[in-house]
Amino acid sequence: MTGQQREGASARGAKAIAAELEPVVASAVRGAGYELEELDVQQAGRRRLVKVIIDVTDDRAAAGAEGVGLDEIAEVSRAVSTALDADDGLFAGAYTLEVTSPGVDRPLTKPKHWRRARLRLVKVKLADGNAFTARVGNAELDPAGGVELLRDGKLGRLGYAEIERAVVEVEFREPPAAEIARITDSGGTGQGAGEGSGVEKEES
Image 1 (cartoon, rainbow, N blue to C red):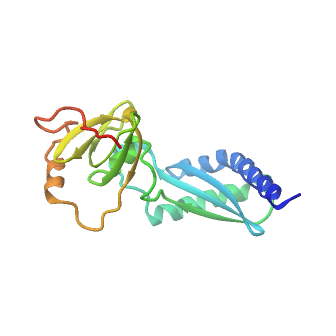
Image 2 (image 1 turned 45 degrees about the vertical axis):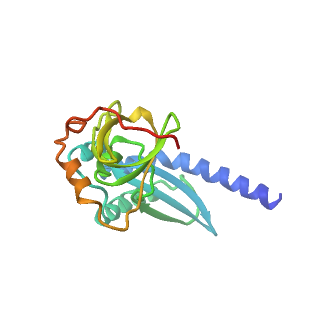
Image 3 (image 1 turned 180 degrees about the vertical axis):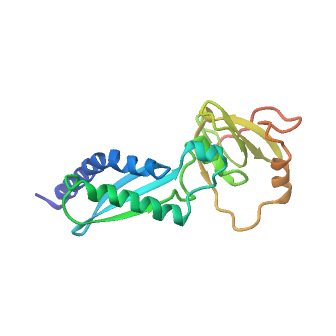
């Protein structure tokens, strides 16, 4: 077997293991009060690396939860480790468990992601190919809803269905006070006073 074949077989094996682990890990994460965002299994020498990404549940997001802290990660790590160790048939050999929360570069794919990105600058690509940068305002938790976006001083609303991809842009200085005030003064109505409901678009 060539090195490339071994690598392919290893990748397929890791995916199969992840598929077997997912219901066990998801149950442990839910039991701790959180949601499994992603599960990945990688071979790291003689050990396997089990990477678990967790997030707050929709209910917690609706209640205003900001995210997952270090104490919460430690709590979930213990719960997942206990669940994996309790089932000897899941996989043989040593493993390393890594539990983390989503990074700032995670695409905004769920309403709760938009809710937590309020006041952040995001790069948005629309389903029609247009792209622009805007600041996030109030976001609805209904997947059929949408989000306020402030662009060029104008606050408008886009439906989630119109957005193909969006990621948070890292800012190295304080955001303009006028932009923050424009969003916070909107009153959560879904659109700015005197503005239309759409966001102006430009060709990418």
